[in-house]
Length: 443
Image 1 (cartoon, helix red, strand yellow):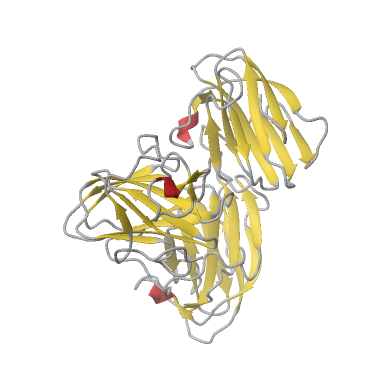
Image 2: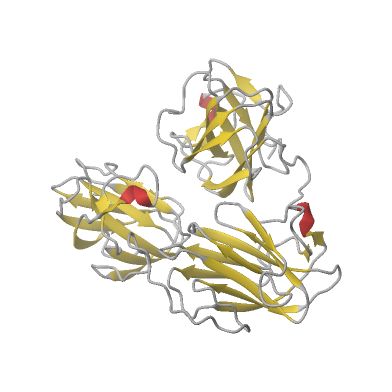
């Protein structure tokens, strides 16, 4: 909802506002160094909005609920361009930015629809800390943060709708999935020119994705997405980072093929386009970790082994359980030995401790209205690392109720698989720990 009118064109500026957010804390979703003239433009990253702190603590003109630590940090080297920071979500989100000189900017709905947007004229070089808030308390929404020197869309959209339900469905795929390739039948084409995304994109696509893949990365180097049709088709893919990829004929004949590296867990939206406007053709979409495309000559290669490191595809070392909302007894406990040979910050910056390659425990959870609280109790200093059903990584060091115990609370828990690691803060310290799963309290 539109909450207030801005005093300037795109943002409310509060120089010397009372400190409310901790911009000295490590950003939850990481940081980036951008120099003037950066490409690709816009730079995109996926973030979950919201938090427990009112943005109005910074200024009465700011709206929404934000986290304490920044969601993202941008280290920017200015060079004659204006800088635009915006967010896109299916939910009502807000934006809070702290600039290099400590000045605060905030916005509610200056972007398209209920999306926020801050435009900085003659920006300074330095660090910009960014919070994406939710207008409503308790709303935690998938959001794409965008940073641009050429401007972001206000009022209309030149890009497809990544928040619309996929027309031909979706799939949850975990690293090592079988069968490989995963295939689905779709109809290509639409009324939107793919060239609106980039001059290198070809064909005509729908507004909503044709198919969505919720992918849990876990040690494989590439993901290959291809389409096979008797017609001339194209591909458009929006990856888990929010980056766009297109292809026309990199597959066999007139078939498109996109190979993605540096895989992240998250949602991959896929459009199968038709090269010619008005052509709607039956197509087979394939998703593969081994480079295979259904309907094409198989490549003589075995499935690659996962890279060494944290591997969600491995069986959980201490077993698994399926729990439904309201489960008894609460808490559910299992004894685990903490620690391992891999740094937890290899999957998410800022995570503490050393963990094993395989998950220690796997929880399949059917969510209800109560929060899900996962914690560990030990006489040693332990940490927690969790990959949730949406492929997001969460970690904690000392957030439990006692001593050095870790705990993570999921207020709007998703149903699905939670992979859990109990780490040791110090390398080589393998300690007995009690893993606790509860809807009531943490250890």
